[in-house]
Image 1 (spheres, rainbow, N blue to C red):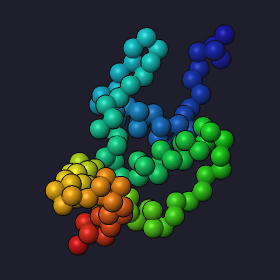
Image 2: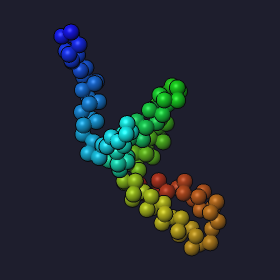
Image 3: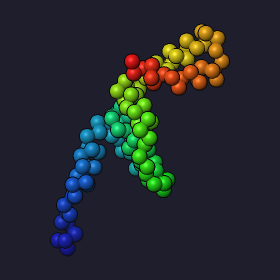
Image 4: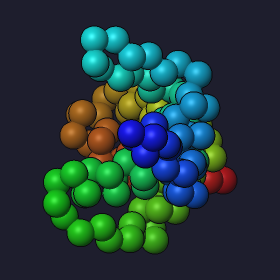
Length: 119
């Protein structure tokens, strides 16, 4: 029964996963459920792409590379920070409201926000 107690060495990929899990500062396990503070991972570069790939894996769709323009737009959001980006969007919507625009027209104008933020 000595074979039962011997641990199989972890592969490099398994060690990487273990280290990533152990690096989470807000990891909590309660009643068989695992949770972390979302802000701990959402702000990490590459999070959105990893989330998309995980969703495709879970839902059985083949992973496809992100469109270059979509990736560039998300890179802008990552560089600016999600809170600052949302603040800019909020300011834009408030200005549209003051100008008397309908919500639909205000939302149409939001498509120009990323190019304005990069300057």
